[in-house]
Image 1: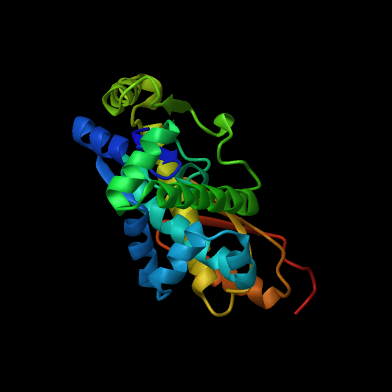
Image 2 (image 1 turned 90 degrees about the vertical axis):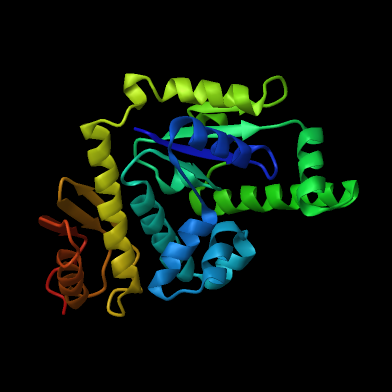
Length: 267
């Protein structure tokens, strides 16, 4: 597997844990800004993409179909970054954006005093300002994940491991995760590598369709397995089905293509 995602509330120690793991394991560490920068190569501004990752429904609802396009680009960028394995991703919703991939999904939580102290030191805030900042950021994240994925981001069932810094240190948490990734079930194997490749290909196709003028208004689901690709979704015309086929087949790695949901006898 060798892909670890770390999620947590604002100033819960997630970045510290990611940095510690990166040094211990020799893994690359990537965060939201790296993904946004890569996704922005499509021509969408970094500010819009960053907002699409963190702003709650009021922002995304105004974008309507735009949120689908932006998230498709972000997922494609993240999938490509983690594809080689041996990566620690520190950022909101990494485990949701990589759903279906072999990922060690980790959540870190910390006592309120720990979080307040970090916010005050990092942002040069007083206690009241730090409290408001943390509460606002946590509130936005909860609304975002509920709106996009229909889940409560604090639900422990969304994670393989929940680590609480109340009675352990970041070093202790690092020890636990470093030990886990040495186990066979979490190792980077040919099978887990293939799953990462499949997700990267499917995400690449979805993003390519989202950015093409003839298919940008569609919302489709893309699945890939060893070069065999299935695209699911309602399309308004056979012309768009032909366009989906043309565009998807041009994506490197596609060997076989199956498009479902195309209308019959409709031009």
